[in-house]
Image (cartoon, rainbow, N blue to C red; front, top):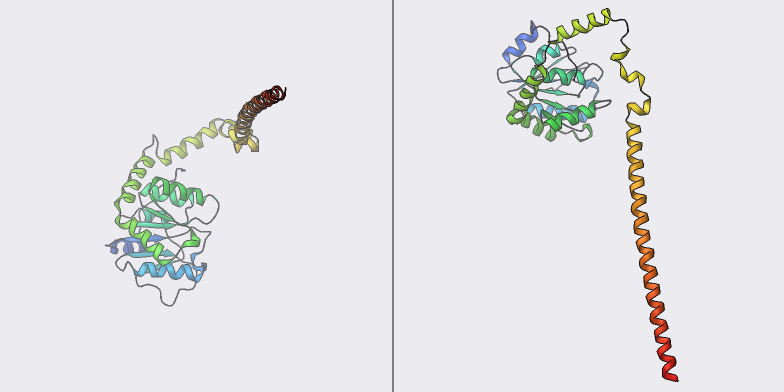
Length: 266
């Protein structure tokens, strides 16, 4: 996960909103490239039904579009949200996101357990990592319904496993020799001191198949092919040997039987 710069606490309207959410708040945001207001009606209604199951929880949704006529009473929408600051507020209990790397990094920094619904690019992989480390829950968008959302949020809110795991991950994420500002300053000055920075970009010196580890895959395939060929050759040799023995035995038995038959006639 990349370093990022923590910014100032909330202020103004959002500070008041979060301070008043004494039973907790849930942030819903899918970044700047995905407009949740344009989701299929079935998915939006599933979200609304889920929110009604948690009447004491305040939901803050980044929403850029016409407001629905019957939105839940515990839902606040806004075209723009100070996401990082909201994630840093102590009353925030969960984050529903698209698993974008910046959003996941911010949630991890602030120790907020997360529900992700990957949609494209690296989001599936990020969702897999979230699920594997048990700092949150990853859902498939095609399987979204109110029951799935309600069950998932209940797990995040009331199963301390996710909160504890995310807090532990946050402690690891923050534990570094230099804070993000110092890191940014150091590398900026490093580039100014040294004109040649090619050594900082080793991937540029690799071919496409090397970046994708295709050369190692090819080596593995060759090793497996050779091993399979040796095994097949060994099995074939043993089969041929057994067949030749069986033929020899049959030939001997047949010859002996013929000899006995001829001796009996004489």
